[in-house]
Length: 71
Image (cartoon, rainbow, N blue to C red; front, side, top):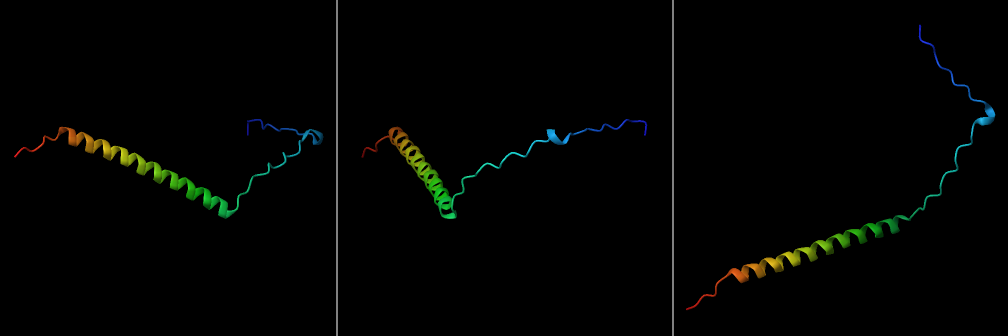
C-alpha cells in the first residue's frame, strides 16, 4: 500500500440540510386517463384528416391523367 489515501474532513456546522422536496402536482387517475384519451383522439383525427387530403389529391391526379372514353 504505497498509495496515500485521501480523507475528506467535513465539519458538523458546514453540512447543509437536504433541500425540501418540491410539491408535485398529482392528478387523479380519472384526469390522467381523460388526458390520455384526448391525446389519442387528436392523433387519430389528425391522421384521418391527412389521409383524406392525400386520397383526394390522388384521385384528382388520376382523374386528370385519365382520357375520356369516346364511343
